[in-house]
Image (cartoon, rainbow, N blue to C red; front, side):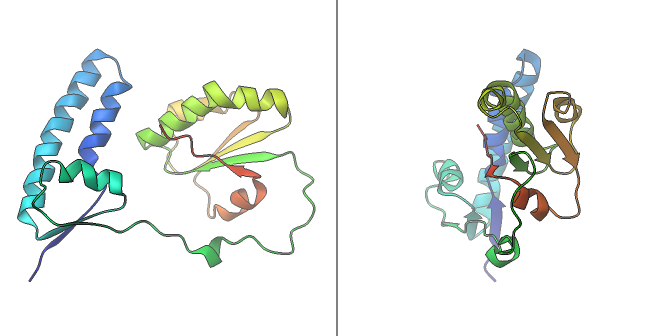
Length: 177
């Protein structure tokens, strides 16, 4: 029976990137973990007959280390019918809104929103003072919760359905670095 490993992404690369955004001791630990995890990913890839990733970039990271192993890319998908906004939308009377959705204890998302609120959103507010930014997602870290102290930033935490926030927003932001 063929064995297939769905890596989704290259976790070792995430740990390597974490190191770039943390001070010395932590960055050293993250780099060490990245190297260990990369060795483990190679070992796993050699144990399985085929591996799967969601992006070419992620697949390429592993392929450099195991060029002889078959790798496929199966991108994530979205249920377009479920996320299509209603056609009977009323005129917008609320202030313009931006939205970011994601797990808010996941480092790339935390970093993205910290960066956006620090470097980009103040400039947006200069042009559109009434604009609101909704950060929607489970498990907001203390760093994310702190962002709600900035003007016009709303951190919701977990919500039963993200669609009302997406429908309210004029723009969905994805400032992932």
